[in-house]
Length: 232
Image (cartoon, rainbow, N blue to C red; front, side):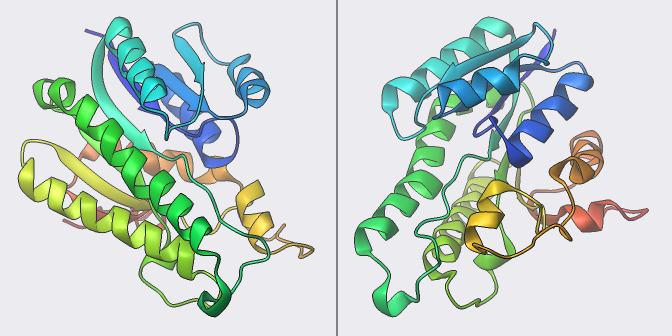
């Protein structure tokens, strides 16, 4: 049966690159993004077996639509939580970080992925499935200005660890792609030249290797997966 994946936040950056990599491996895909025009542009050069569903991942109806499309396409084996937000730009210190922005970051980064996971679990359990939570070194390191984003990603990582303990038949990975040349990363450093960062496409091969080798659940850096052996 055809393998199916959901990739959120796939209109640009890492999500778009991962969608292309998975489609190239024959996966059927359901992709989403809030910007319908950007999502349509990302969709046009992908195979026919890719369904684009514009919407906000924090919307319960949108999450239900993603699951419905995935179930229609076939065997749901992979859920990639890539959708996210940076928060205010320039990045403010925690002393002045707007609390409404913190709530928004937690809603997008933790609550919405957990809600989508809950909907996807019945299919994933039956299909030897995997869940990928795209994270950041800001979740484990203390960088000034990154308190809101980093705290939200840290919460996502802890949820992934607990889910892995509760669902031992699944693979649940928190995946750190490293610093990439993306719009979000540029927003974190307004006015700075980030052309020295690698393009998102460069981390697609180690991501596909992760799926092929299926190491134990846990936190992984894609840079490490580019080496000859995947650590257990």
